[in-house]
Length: 64
Image 1 (cartoon, one colour):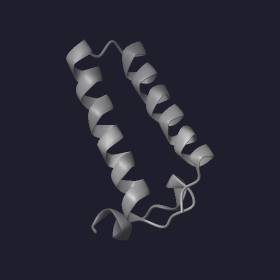
Image 2 (cartoon, helix red, strand yellow):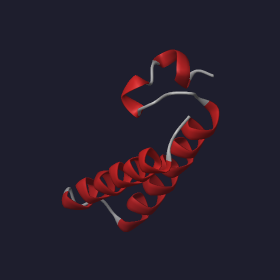
Image 3 (cartoon, one colour):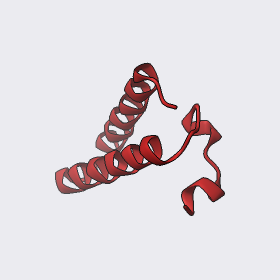
């Protein structure tokens, strides 16, 4: 089960990913779309797995 602290860390990671893409000069539309897609994925991960960290995710988890 994901704790609120772990969920906040996932959101921080998502934000850092968007910052990285921004530094690489990705377009605003790409930033918005990737940000949304990552949010949907992280929400799915939290709701559908019993992982303790994202580092524990395997291909088997992602093929569910």
